[in-house]
Length: 496
Image (cartoon, rainbow, N blue to C red; front, side, top):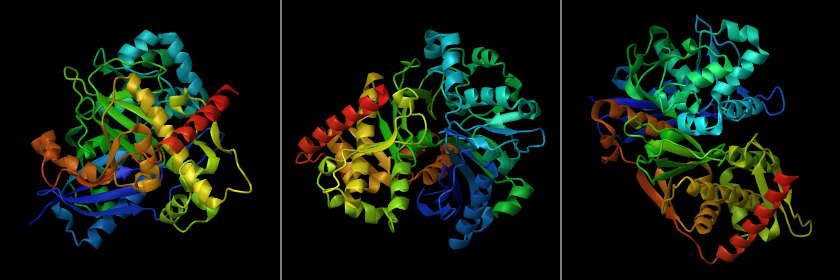
């Protein structure tokens, strides 16, 4: 009898569930729920919230669909892995009831709180202990709740990250990981403990932190209730969890210094690995414990996030009423590199960390009404996002992270030849596209609990390379000219 692993990827757009063969690592299936993208609620400008129960319900629906579509018997599922959108805040009371909508990664309400904490603690302390400014991360969001919704804070039993919440709903066990706490800016890398100094500064009770478990371990088992709701078997273990960007790097076998993974979903990310447990603050780069991090063997994920990437293209698709992204990519390919002078800034999804938490917004500049049409809007958007990635790669080099090749999964923006070729040309680097996604990577990671990280380099568990984009030097002059103009417009907007 064959056995299988299921991996979940909790995105802000959808929940994906992937199924792999536990013996061979081969992908069996992948489903996404809901069919349409999840909405993000914005009760106030700069806010972004989602209902955590929706993540769980869609994970349940996706699980049942996987089992049905592939005629899988529930008892043959022997492990669960979880990948999730980073930096979110979920609060529950002592009955496990969610107290308020999750404050998710692109919410910018806590920027000033984090900036004030940086001043209070000092840059040197934050660089050496937290590897980041407290910034607009989970712990700062929790401080915002204490300041503005004090009654809810008093009712809180534990706070957790989105992946912690899904694991809790599946297993009934409240726990988290060191990489998870690091992305919340609640881990002290120097002392190898929760960040007590920052917790004290914020007046937050450390008892609200869940139990800490290893990234690869038996972290809980499916409850009777969750078995009914997912179709899985009671007792199926949760074996792995990680934030979506560390998990994406794992999916691409990126573990060692100098290796770089990238994604182009709702947000865009460059994620490089370093062995330095110290960070340059205000560089636009954030540093977190990677999935294979150990205190005596540091592996730090240097993450550059661009909030406004795929969401920009999604917005444009709705505006143009395009049938698909493939149709938009086709329109974009009809326009020459440089978009005939049309320039797009793609920063319309909250405060941008790489721009020091400023919000220049999305804009189209240098519009020529006699030249530009829907095709130019598509190409300029793709190029504007590529320019943002190129800008970010320069910042990543400041943290001594560079590579000859970027690795990415087979999803979203990187499937566009216009986008990927433009970025490859601007960076003068190859971009390797692999047949993997976050959910499949999370499923394969279950094997690590049994056999170690080296299993992910074995055939079947290793992602299959599908395509390599190489620089197109015939486009280089036009793209460099367009990038220079884009940089001028960005500088003007940041200084305005």
